[in-house]
Amino acid sequence: MNQEKLLKAIESNARYSTEDLARMLEESEENVAASIKELEDNKTICGYNTVINYDKSPFETVTAVIEVGCTPRRDTGYEEIAKEIYSYDEVSTMYLMSGKSEFIVIIKGKTMKEVASFVTHHLAPIDNVTRTETYFVLKQYKVEGIEIGGERKEDERLLFKL
Image 1 (cartoon, rainbow, N blue to C red):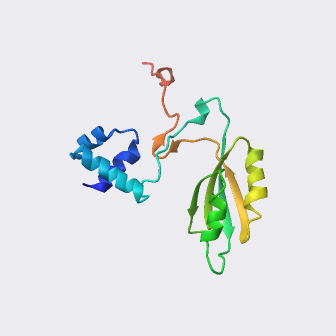
Image 2 (image 1 turned 30 degrees about the horizontal axis):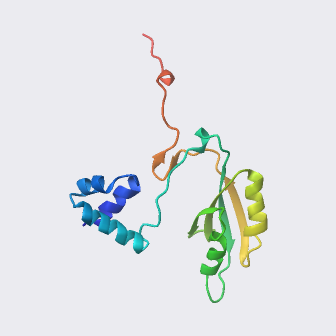
């Protein structure tokens, strides 16, 4: 079974049934199910997520991208620092980066004040963290390959007169 094709299919739509995937990959449902279980067991597939356009929901949310500068620890490098940061429930995504910052941390909160409080009381005091720089997301255009709110209404077309 071509696991790369299977992963791309699931990544594009996690709601595909085993039957749909088997048909797409020209495999048996049993082979597809066994491959998915193997990929979940070895943590290649780590979860299935939903992309939500909060602008269309009644719930308020603020997303912040935070650059974190730090110095590595003598025995563990960046690993223990990363674990301290990503253990907080507010952290939705975290990356070790090349460039001017060691980490990019993405968090969600109800308000900007809540995000600021997280940075001030939890992130900045961590040993070896030397700086933080917080950016607030003003608008989402595309998330995980999915366009957000990009639909055009019929009455928005430009009129052309002869």
